[in-house]
Length: 272
Image (cartoon, rainbow, N blue to C red):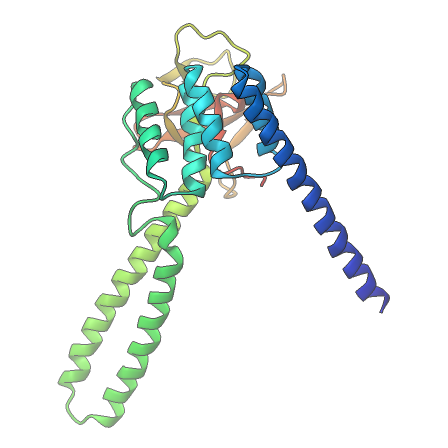
């Protein structure tokens, strides 16, 4: 009985805390809207960022992306347009705004699209269900043909077709899983707010640390995939001054190097 009461109190407390967070996020959101209307873009951005730490919505990230676009911080703008589209992938206005942000950043949209193909993350559950159905229905038909049909030709023909169909479904599922893994590690490069970078580029270094030589340069707004270490976690290294560096590559694999944690933003926060 005491265990049940404790569980109920815990659930009630969690609900109250969640409602408080949502209420605070709403207040911050509308304060940001008022600041934006008053022309104070920096204050509006700060308020939206505080609200995004408590709750996420396509409207919130879309508004934030538009503010960064007005300030010509296209890396941040592309990041938040991507976040907004992850929450509302069917919004054509967000797609148009994202493409315009890429154009203004002198970038081409990534060739790999995580939301608009039949092999995207959104279709993972569909392909898993299809695989299960194809496997078990095919197996039942095989048993029927094996034990109740005298001719072996139907059995051989069906077995061949069943293996081909199941293999294609399994391949599609693996593609979705790969994209899900890469989406979870995809980041968007942007210039750190505290720095005045006149070159408007971000350096990928050969090794972690400012003093190491530059391997290649990228533009703000480019997509990168954080590499995995031998233990299966994101490959990172913290240097003496406390900065954490991550090993990343471009989506086409042509660029690779170490990038500082404040020079990119996660599309999906790994800590959320």
